[in-house]
Image 1 (cartoon, one colour):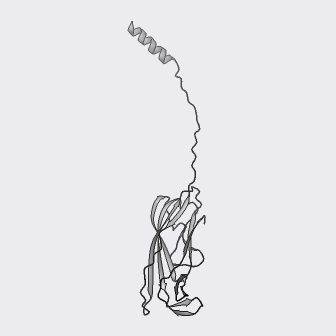
Image 2 (cartoon, one colour):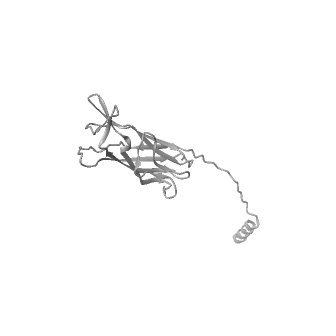
Image 3 (cartoon, one colour):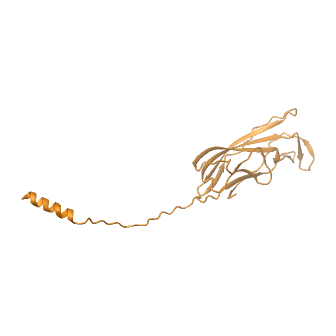
Length: 190
């Protein structure tokens, strides 16, 4: 008798149509853009001991980091302007012109995000002469540069044999500590 009941229940279960339930549910997630940030380590030029018989140089190597978390793909550019180097002796100012400095930028590391391919767009400075006006150091084209990147900037100051005093008079290089103000600017878009 157990077998009949079992067979009847099994037959009934197979005869009933299966009940299925499906419900489409739309879900959302909001992705909010973050910040665009550029940092750079301090520019420290090597000291020079005067030797008027040879071309003299001072070098500085710094790291610059770009982080673009905005999520808009607008691209970006980093530029730099600087003042002439100035030293004061006996109340007089003496200048090494900023155009005595050249800079070369190199991409050192893609920390995260889209790898940069400068053969496809964007730019890297190569022996770019610095100026009082903003000079492009490196850039990422539209649809690139969304991520975090480390750049190396190599500065070379070629000491001129003749410099100017505040009155415009040209003289030989004056020994002293020369200072310049470097201003780095990051802009969105190209």
